[in-house]
Image (cartoon, rainbow over all chains, first blue to last red; front, side, top):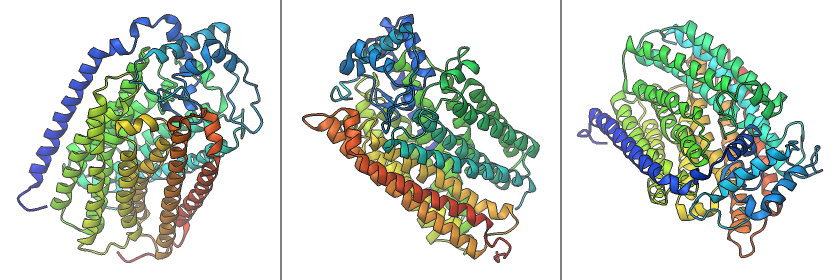
Length: 142
Length: 458
């Protein structure tokens, strides 16, 4: 770097550039928030879906699965699990997990959910599946 | 050392290394669970081991950042630390809180932990990397604010250099963006949107300022190159980091319900994110080549060069590999992401903390540098860990490419678990590379206990 470009010029570009791009980011985020209601289906969120999200969180489902591609990569994507298994199939799968796992295979814990809790989880997953994700995932396998 | 209060950094460094060992052991458990699915089930299910693995990483890096800052700020400010006592109190607070959190993860089911720790008061748990119970999250805020108060007061009474300003902006940013971990709306799209304000703006934003600042500090000390030159470079690097990285957040907004235009913003700006890392590599090599002195601590210089190169490869190149929206459509949430995550964290943050420890620890132990024997061992550890991590990344990348092909691209897409079984060979190879990493880590720790008594001339 030549002598004409001084440290104080570099510093000013740093502060100016950071502030500019942070403000641009805030502007884009603001615009996103005006568009989100049409995409995130928030009008459909019921107390049951909220309960499903809570169950999703307090059982740390994200520790093995992905949801819209985010999470751990140990177990299948669940944003579209309703497409793969259907509502009843999803519930049956969760209910049927053996307590001590399946020998030699990756196993999902048995969470002993009540019917009400299972319905809430499925309602939440169904809601996630309704979000406009720009056609992701590429196919039903997630 | 120049200021005796810098000594508070020592327990932070020791704790960091201890937790690092825990992180790697749990990494090996996870790697084994990838191929022997029922390993330790149901005692330690995968999700629990993963939480321990990632949370230990975050916590030990924070210990490293804090130790590094406590070492650096007094020297840069040319004054004693405002309150060494506060630094030690916060150290024990953080260590005990961290240990209790890990015990909590392992001892009781996560849902029970959530119930016990007041998640019902404010639901923040169960989101990736932010799994900590509410009291732990609040504890992190208290510890970080106390830490920032201590350093800010130190700086206010002393000299304010560019290096310490950049560090403090990075650390304050770390604190501010962590606050988004308390925001967890019922709307999952909004939840994910702001979750990234903690996660992305940490690792691809403000943490890079901490990285750049530490690197600049060690380069000044070990090369003797003029501060004006190094600080100018630092400003250029952190400028490039933030002007690419802030809008680069958009590469997480492709498929989570956010508008299509993020595919453009995210792709373009995150395609530029390798540039600051490349600049960091050039910076490190350039300064070392122009060195005006031969510092006896060769190991620290090696870590400094290594962090530049590996951060560029891991964060820069491996990030670029899957950051363009049309590519990411197929790779999103696969082993490609895991490959990138491993090398990026190792190259950028693990190595820079180890560089700081490598430089500061001998001085904290009363010598300019470790004995030749100890440094040789440390360099062996450097190469073993770095090569092992390179192979972990390559094997995960191979697994990821196959996974994407089998599960998403092929005309007859396979179910997730069927595809996983077909790529198990690569998971086995990754596990062996992980074992090599652990051996490197053991050698690294041994280097602290070898030939420490024979002092090198400064």
